[in-house]
Image (cartoon, rainbow, N blue to C red):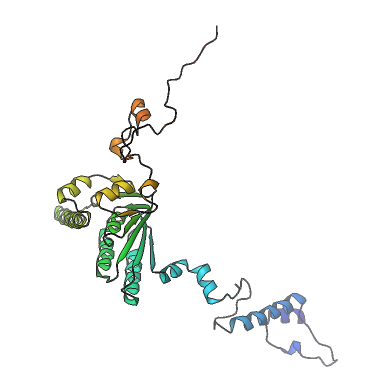
Length: 298
């Protein structure tokens, strides 16, 4: 019973069972409990320097220097120190709040140095994206935009909204533009209200894109009527970007648009003969496909 009482007591507390008995002997807790108490004392000495939280005996992480902790647990914080804002994922209110706060912070710290905005986004909310766009326009510092992976929908819109002459794309990235998407249900009046709101956003997006792309609004409306995918070279010619990281020669120079994709075997074999952006000819296939003929021995 004495051993059980010693086990149930909290670590580090003395009880009457820890004191010498009348016969001069000392009642000691089991070895496992004593080891646990020693571990608690060690954790207490470590955690008292930087934390007032209760002791955590198991799963204690080693204390690292501040810069090592940042490198291991906060890569976005390190990028922010280099004036790099990383935007990956869907455009929504949560991500927009994070991007806007980072842009405003960097602009307040030093408005003379460029801000680099890296974009890898499939798009999302139009209103959230317009919040990011307005923050980019508010910044006194130039905002460089970089596309890697995919910049689609609002992601492509924000890519083109960077400072003129400082909009970049990785050579293997893809860029897609289209008109706003939405839906409505309920009473006829409610559907009409939502339809008018979508048409407003469509007209506003087309107006802004026409300005920074140098295209006519009619062309923007025509090109965004359906999903339009672009290579970096096509996006550069369109006016969405200004430069390609690694140069134009780093891009795979075959038109990959859905309208030009081959639909027959002959088109597939000859695909690329006249689609090189630099005007050169020649199939990208080393050995054109030949019809299969099976030889039957007699």
